[in-house]
Image (cartoon, rainbow, N blue to C red; front, side, top):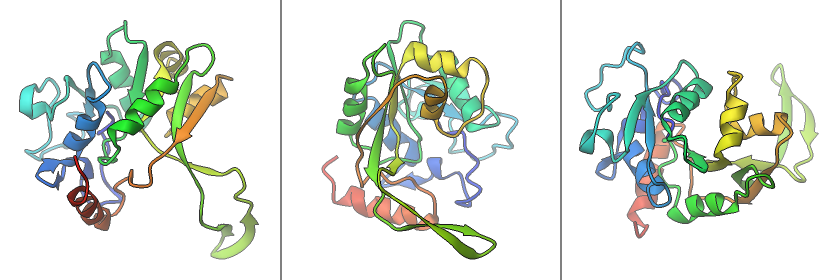
Length: 221
């Protein structure tokens, strides 16, 4: 569970803000626990000027861990934080799920869908996708320079599930990426897809938090 971001675009560490009575990350952990034997929560590193009392600290347990099995410090980048989480996952794990804590509404069925679709040696990773509905324009210097054919284009969500050996191998080189599946693609491994969920929004702007509150209020969770 990647929760090490600084929240610069949002204006706060959104993954720890309150949402319907719980921190955002606690909702994300709750969803992951429906399929996972354990959850490693990756939080901002101690040297990241973290002062908020509400943030879990590495080594936290019980309620202070927001429901996670372990809490570890992340890296300077998202990829570094994923690697910090991988280091804490038991060696015997067969499938590892990577999820952004800022997607608190991912339903249990979506977690199950990506895990069930992993078939080591045939399908090494699985990502949830939604077809792009909007017209896409390429823009440069404030002007439209082209229209992008959206045929076959998909937006990608988390949770994403991977054969553990494949995920560890592609991260072993220390490559930087904002999408773990891209590392598998670059290594020539097979990444499959399942249908995403339109309710599985990523909290990016302050108004997204209000939308998440409204969606939770109308959901049976």
